[in-house]
Length: 470
Image (cartoon, rainbow, N blue to C red; front, side, top):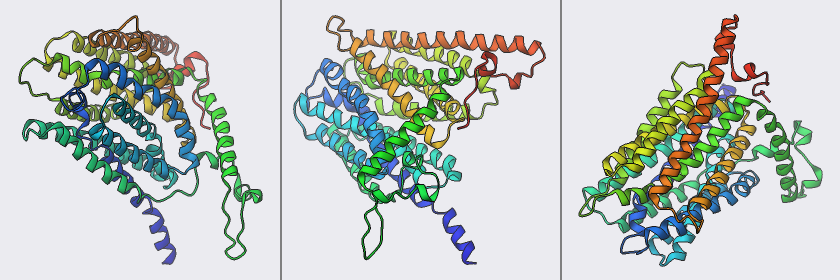
């Protein structure tokens, strides 16, 4: 009976950290001021121009996030996840305090730097749960953690629209409400259990004997409790990182795996650019006069429709290894068309509708890409592979931002920027349409030779080994 109770307690041990993490994820995304950030910054309170927001403020997030990703990834494992989650919550609070009470261009730029710290801290939020629950719960807790973030963002967007449209709440009040929710998120982060070990440091341990290093242990004569030194923890983390990195390179030898990673990085880069500057585009498209902006409502609809599209993608009975790249090409073309129309139309409602379509298509495709990349990875490789892909995405975004926004000779308008973003996705669509058609045609010709189509994958057709189960 005692054994049964202990086993039952172990089975339910995942519930508490998952519940607290989901509560934190929901509260941290309850930022109703975010859909109306550009109107607030360009309003009478801050009195910044659209050009200043576009060229001198938003790029701060892009550049800072790029250089913070790798240090944050290493610190996440080194400090055992929870401190990074707390740091993320603190950075969000700092960001909105500066937004609300700071004055001048410099304070807003500092707030965007704080926002980039919080964005880089996402790695702590999305990998924390793997260090405190058993592997048999990974699929369930991952879905819960992502659903909490998605539901929080949609709820905040809808709340902001209701407050602005129905109760005519001021944008400054939206900031105060945001700070309140973020303080609650910071408080909830302290209730997360502290993991005992990091993922990377486990890689260097083989058995009980390897997990104890006498040179890294300080022994108290009374308690005989051992604590690893920080020096040894650094060594184990970097050694584990090197080992996992070498193993991850084997995955990139697969052509199909590499192409899914390419779309993941390029798509994420373009998505960040489109969503980061869309409020500026909406502001230019809005009719003059006493027009009520519906930024929050559009964000809520786009997020929920994207979630529905992602769920639908997960239930389509297709051989994604064969048809996945062609699907990426076709839907990328649909996203490209929506961006071109969003850029060229003079009607704000058409612009809103195109944004909802674009975001739904993106979330659908990123879900499929994530599944295709992750299905052959272990938990250690999952974190690093997606970290590499995200870093590539941020590097591309930094380059795109530097060329489009900060090149003095160009000085492109927002309308021209979105034409470039649409063309960027058009290039992606062409690449994957050509690749997808090639793979399908090759599969058809092989099928005529008597090969079962379900056994055909881009790897088998190209003769390159598929993603290995390391």
